[in-house]
Length: 117
Image 1: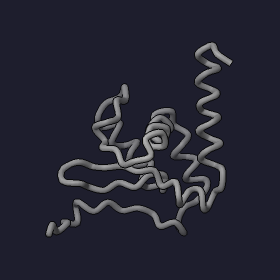
Image 2: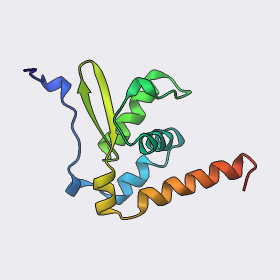
Image 3: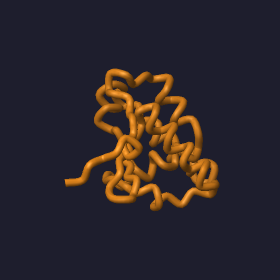
Image 4: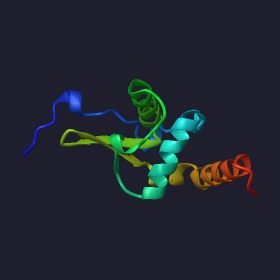
């Protein structure tokens, strides 16, 4: 049986602590939205190392922390890997349709900016 040390336990807001303005803040950055888009598409837990973001490692760490602290993702350790999952159930329960609407709007914007309609 593995014992978790306090440094290996990551704090997350409970469902009742989630606030719309904090979730929207977390999703307002293109890199964080990209992480959410990839987690949503995979529908499974992903290691931080899976994400190929064009920013420094310390900035990636910052973005994951913002997403976790604002209740958009859950993070936990599996061995030495930090795993991530989208808190879709919590977000959908509190803010029905928000996540799907934002992801669809992001998809449409990406297509529009790429020249497609």
